[in-house]
Length: 452
Ligand code: AMP
Image 1: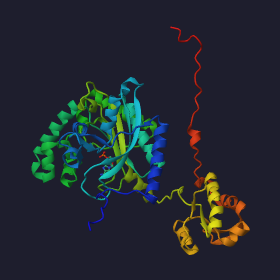
Image 2: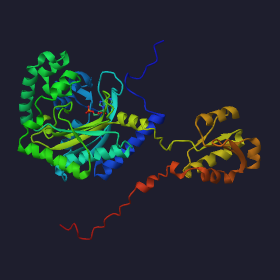
Image 3: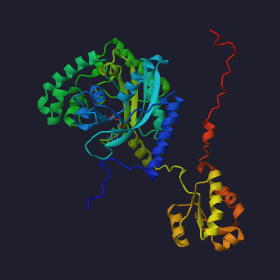
Image 4: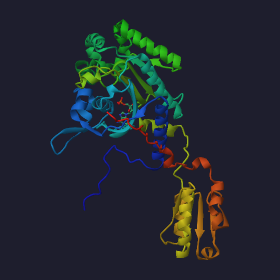
């Protein structure tokens, strides 16, 4: 027989503990963005290939090696999105957000796909959580973005466990000049470069700043720096970003070798690194991308700034800190029954338990007590209520406290009160959907309003 189909390599199933940490990360992210005036956007997982090719650039790693491409039944070329920024900007333009008050504050939490080289910390489906401020240019927005990102990391309990690296890439004109200088500096030292860096020197010299080669790292200390090529306006922009960061109390380290993988950035770029010195040491990064809208084919420039965190990196970092999360999925009460009478008693009781916010589970089959107890144990149920034939007759149950290993007989009508008294209310999920509803009174138009 054919082999059972396996999960796609370097993609992960999220469940149990990992899923709980993922939820925690999502909650913190949502909370911090919401407090800062962002609302959520979700864009399709699939975008046109054209969008991604235009934004990332034909020579980028993303386009040349990492795209998951597909063709639909009509022959349209599509990709599983490798990042969200181009889709978010597309959505802004396509949905005429320019007509709304500017700038627009959006955040997203989305799965992304890159056919990355397999290595620890890199997955082929991964998630990013990011924010974009679109439609206005002001260095205060860049500083605010960095602040929001830091507040997310702090909220996750990672304060003191990351560094903000900051740089400016100026505007394209300045950068072009700088790239030429950088290129001629390294051309004169080509023999010191390895094969990868020699290729970079020809195709994308800026990537040399990213080199892992120790010789190149040494050379970079004396190589031309982007900041020396900034004209007054760009220098002032960068100085302002730093000034606002100081006011916000955000510590940063300037790193003139910081470039982001994609070409569309201008002015401010930054990255949050975990300081471990590992190859995968980045929680995420961001930058200003005023030029992207035009690159995508829009007639005018739309200023924007954004960042994204890798969700898996955040989850793993939070797990590494050793914090345990409150488990709202935990089973508080497991009902075990023996016989039909017991079942009839337990069914309404289990409904009442749910209505009183307990997570409960009703063991419905008819296996032996031993098997049912084993199951309750595996599920780490806090309490087990057992009703056998005798108990059903007497209107009682055996209440087992699984934490303390004790057992008492309690009247059926007292059971839930007994259990609830022992449960930490913080573990209960008091969500009432109807509390999210807003009843809007219809506006009664005055008579004659529509006369003309
Ligand atoms: P980028 O969009 O490449 O700037 O990546 C931003 C962040 O997303 C990185 O700092 C990582 O935390 C995360 N990230 C990027 N690619 C991957 C991947 N293949 N697997 C897991 N996380 C990733």
